[in-house]
Image (cartoon, rainbow, N blue to C red; front, side, top):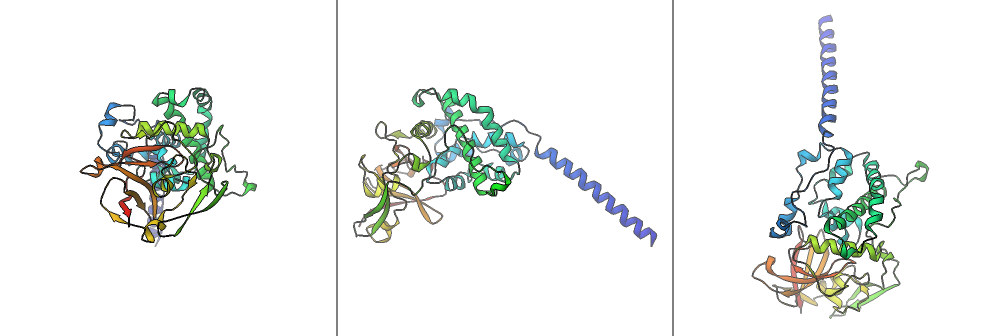
Length: 352
């Protein structure tokens, strides 16, 4: 009996020792990389423009998981916020929608959200970069180099992530002393509120009412003209096929759905959250790509983007369209070269 008890205690001790060594080994394994990942290709390189589509460019910026799990919090933060496509977050109406979308191809977002002390790393980054960003803001956005523009975008990304984590992953109980909004020198993009000047309805050809917001301002989007302009030039660099349809097309008044389905006028002041009624009431029917057709990107039960076909090629990657990207500019671009092209289903529509 004594031998059995002794054997059990010995086995328990060995297992305990093994677990300690394993935990220590895992700690070292997780946090042995303390520098951010250097992306092999970025929008300021000729190689970026030679990659045939947004899918190939995203794949070129993919960070191996075996590297990500070894990163310290600060290295992981900088790797995620400097990813060339993390700023796709701002092409959507809400930060939550944008982060959910980019986490599909910015491989590091989900891992970052699992870290317990990531807010400290984000705050440290913002504090470290503040003086540099204050200096960069003295330069006009259109006169910035890509690297200068990207520095500001990365800073905005950090503030956006910090606020998102505090809003969604940390208790808002003020007794905990937790600040749920990081007080950066300018607000993060975006997040449309329903507090615009007014709202109402426009109507489909078959008479169905479509809800719209009137006269949205920059504050309704939780941003400023300055930030929108910085993001505008970032998109022009990040998406090589993209060009601005007309100078100074940035506007908080209307969005992609309103432009595509309601009015292509530059004086349009209606923001349309959902164009579904145009399709569901039979006003429009499905078609193949033709000039003037409406084009939609559909994902997870909703239409996330709309535009108008402007030229038709033999393939999707040679067909051009015009669309409005959130509260930013009105762009002409290839169908497969925009923030919305990935897991979305692309469809074309003509009036019935």
